[in-house]
Length: 553
Image (cartoon, rainbow, N blue to C red; front, top):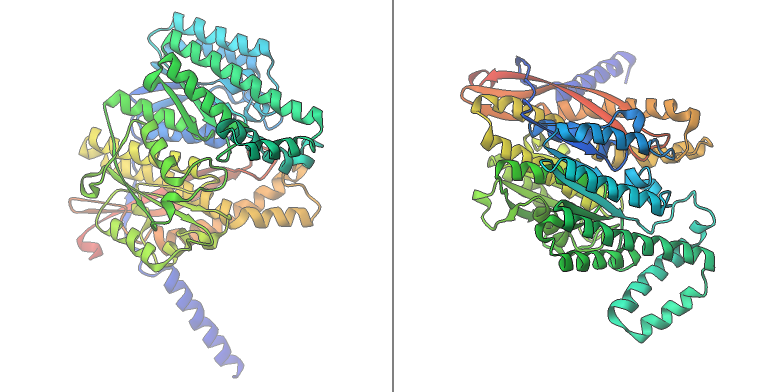
């Protein structure tokens, strides 16, 4: 092949690529949606400063017409630096009378953060100060709908805790056998417990036994406070398994709540980071008398009975937990459900198939509101359904919600909350607000696709390897933080372009009267909230256009 023919062929291939990527995009005129108006507010003392516990709650609050008021950033924690607890107490006391509802994390006010609660940093006097503060503020502000939550610490020892991490497996086995021996009274489990007990140094064993004993005692006091003051109490169970010291504390809390007759004001749930989102959604439903009807569809019959990593129960049990938490109801009638919760959990035994893709595609084509949860047991993109859907150009812009972050519990809580608020607002707001509501909801969905899928599943492990090869530490970036941010920004810029022109911008995300509404652009900003790469602080600013039906026919 001579040089001219080669250049001509290259140009033709380049033209074919650009036509495939950009061809067929609709012609539109700009549409600038107005944000959904806030008609109430909610105060939040978050679990910690990470985006899932702060900005995600604020953005879903905005979708729900609720102004979520957060503490000034300088009062919150920053990775290993705890929050300014005394200043947070003062800020809360000042703000509480100004809002009809509040969600308060016990862990940030006692230990300075979720990470601090695992050490723990708080002392008995800090717990008593918190209990006294909540009791006093409730008496001063009885009109405030107050919810308090606390998290049972996980038993996944941090890599930085030496020598504890050397005994990670032994501690996990010890915790499991201790719970099983107590639950079943089986001599075999007891003998196994005694064997592993002898292999763990007494000081490390005592440290973790005391952690859970103290947490158990504090949970009992929280239940007593909630019963006396008639406030909502949530106890979360951080990353866990079916048996273990955290599960033992969970069972004790359930017994305390039953004895105190807390009823629907006492809640225990698997998870931590999504608790504030769930409480926001629960409050929204109570405020507007909305009981979402939810139809659950699994990508395959195998999914319901699976137990995903860091979960103490099956997928189906977790779904029921989250639906019950927000005050929703499961229904067998897909046609009359407010939305369909489509759950995929991929692993070696449940890889994505064409049939799964077809099922979800058919739901969207039929105009159903679909909340899509996409999980992978081994954190492999090949186990996810999302890349298959993008390749097939299934219009993901039509989703009512999407989530797929690190645990099933987090993802379910986020997707169910987003879809509940979105469909609730569809019932509540005038039809004239619908294009803006759909656009604002899509902006949140795009952000989750770029964060949960593109960053967490496609880049995170590769970035970890790259940093380690260069002698940098992913969990302690120091001066390398800007270097990592630039890599993330560049990668997500490419991903958002591919998603926009390959899928999200091709089909209308909303249709009404004689107008089709399209996603036409995505601007992003990326920061690392802490000097580690575990999570990102991602902001998306979507652009939209509209066109008449006839111009796109």
